[in-house]
Amino acid sequence: MNDPLQERLQAALARPQNLGELPDADAVGTVGNSDCGEMLRLWVKFREENGRKVIDRATFQSFGCETAIAVASLATELIRGKTAAEALALKTEQLAGELGPLPPMKIHCAQLVEGALRSALGGPARAEAPAATAPPAPTLMDRMAAAKPSAPRIVFLDGDGTGAAR
Amino acid sequence: MSAVLAAFPGAQRALFRRYHVGGCSSCGFQPTETLAEVCARNGNLPVAEVLAHLRASHAEDHRVLIEPQELARRRTTEPDLLLVDIRSREEFEAVHIPGSVLLSQTVMQELLAAGTNTRPIVIVDHQGRHALDAAAYFAGHGLQNIRCLRGGIDAWSQEVDPTVRRYRLG
Image (tube, rainbow over all chains, first blue to last red; front, side, top):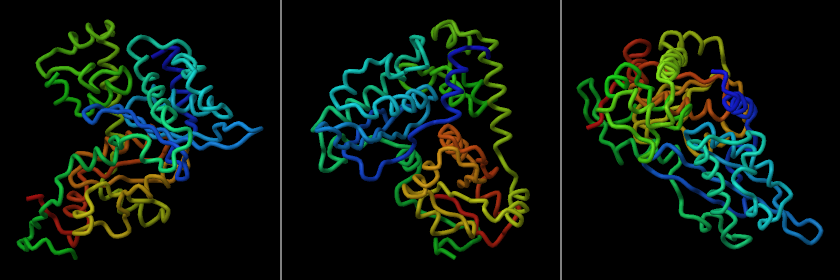
């Protein structure tokens, strides 16, 4: 497929930035739908700089859409050094950065990143408890957990149905 | 689409990743729809191109799978090969392949933190039904050397190590 957007996506996905949880984050935002493959969680850590509280680092986890992963990768780089207000002022197309204009069906992916950013920064500027800034949304772990029965009854097929571990 | 999904079990994942189709209620499709109908109402996607993408993704899925015997052989020569078990904790504690680790938030964080990790990783599930989705997730996050155990731990029990007890979920 010689789609220029697809090529830019592949280039962004080849070197994804800022993946994974940020354990000491000051804020966390999540958007997603448990019935939908698209969900994104964003962690933000601030630092003091010349009397301003600016974003020191932002990381993300996502499931599903490669466009959302690419946009999140670019956006988490873009918001470094910005205040929460400056980051919130960024428009969706600015977050997509070098990916360029997105087709209508992909704009939603960038809006997912914008939503996670607003979820993280829209609350108190500095959350004492990151988990309280947004309700927990499903992650891959949750999806996999949802696909399994809770407290499953394990029946061994070799005649010993006690479920005892070996 | 039901026939498409039967022929290409990973079709929904492939459609969503490339075209943002089939991921949620707003872009989902009905099993009774044809591929042409789905393409038509999603920006007139070229059906032939979409079909080619499905075929390529299907072939890619097969390349991600590793046979139990091949995994057993590689484990003897590649000490850094990591087996990541994505089943429930209850299943893992009941039976697991020796040396494998249960996927947890900590393990997930360690795997994703490297970004472009090239460590060989094999995903293990019960019967091979969920591992490809997990592998797609990790591959999408930059893990470059990820495979799935074909048939899961159940196939491992039957083809490599019968001391790993087979089970079903009651």
